[in-house]
Image 1 (tube, rainbow, N blue to C red):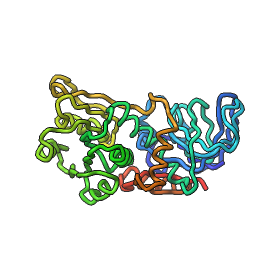
Image 2: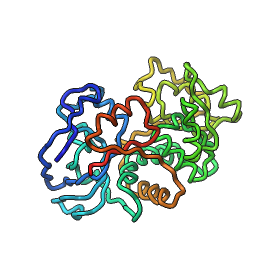
Image 3: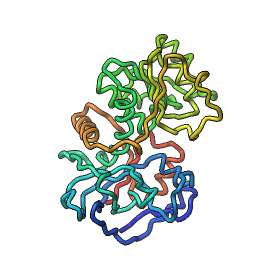
Length: 327
């Protein structure tokens, strides 16, 4: 099989396309013939050596979509359309940057592939929807009519969150650093867009001018670089969920809860790696895309273009969910 292998951490060119033996699954594991896999920013951090505990060489990739080639434990039938996310993929064992991957059966879900739904679209959904859906409905407890701010709205998860939340009846406002991407957010379902281009990463004054009462819910995808500012945007009894690192930093230099979190505002988080993967959110979003209710932009690459894809991810130039097709 062809696989993009990382022998040593570094830049995109460190991903080397090689021929590798097809893995042989043991009972309890599933061999998947990969049709498509999404790219995720966490894989960039692993590529540069910033994911603790990862050993090399390693095939990266925390998600994959395809068909079952073998399931010796009988959990699935050959040919079943499935998706898998996280659970150690691309970190503890080889992941989705290949034509085949072997993963624990508990991390695999059978998913729908209705007629007319491309592998590119289906392959874009698993991790992106797992994160956006979980953050919106598990951590933020989003309700119809909520005013929701999505900080980092032009990221892949941000665009998905905007589309999903708008489809569920929320009034969604998105932020982007580039004014030229404002229409992209509106096309995804945002009612309003705030351009987040100030060097100090502060939009609280402008947001409060437009929405004096604040937001019911805030989805913080930029991360700790804008978290303090985002906490100022929630109304009393509002909720802020941080679950992204678009800003490129994992930690805050100083965290003093009494100074950072306004009284009566609740701060939570969402981690896709700590929550079970379910098929229904993926199926629901896939139906919405087919029916034209949801618009989620996708940019595709071939496996042999994996270096080019990582360059685009490093530069944040895609403005779409990046998906690699294996055929």
